Length: 262
Image (cartoon, rainbow, N blue to C red):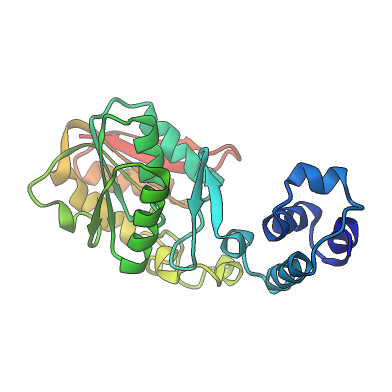
């Protein structure tokens, strides 16, 4: 079987098919486009067929290939962690606009946010908290592979931070409401990383209630949230006696990150 035949028979969108075939065969994406007549080994063809079948059943490409690019880093992902989204890069950009020597990432999952912050601020102390032991193991493996030093803490939100303070706290917590119709398309991803109560605000409310005690004076709390939640998050921040509460939109114009300063 040739590259062109395999791609044509996959039943997948062309970009995804090329990505999966590159992973299955070891050929670069450019080679797949330039040399469709090149033969595949039986092993590569069989591996690609298995990948294509998994994708047709709805499994995300990132889980099939085992990684996802995020802010320039290749992040290992498994079904124990949420797949990093492009819109979350806004949270990273806003964090990097602020001066900080210490930062904590709450609900770190794969470690993507914490690792990018460490990559771009190598002199900063970066701490990451995660309640799932399985997710924390993925994050630790990412740190070792990328040679980035992050302090990993097992626990829920600010609970493992007793007696400490930070110049910046960031979080991309679960913010999908129970019963949200979009959950049907996210069945492969860990539910605990997605769903947060009847209105989706449970985790956000807990973080805001806890965070002030761990913020240095002048420090920022930055939170990713869902569409339509920005006003509620600003209210939570104001009620927690944090100042300058404001919201930033993502590239699609959707209010995506809300933050405030102590």
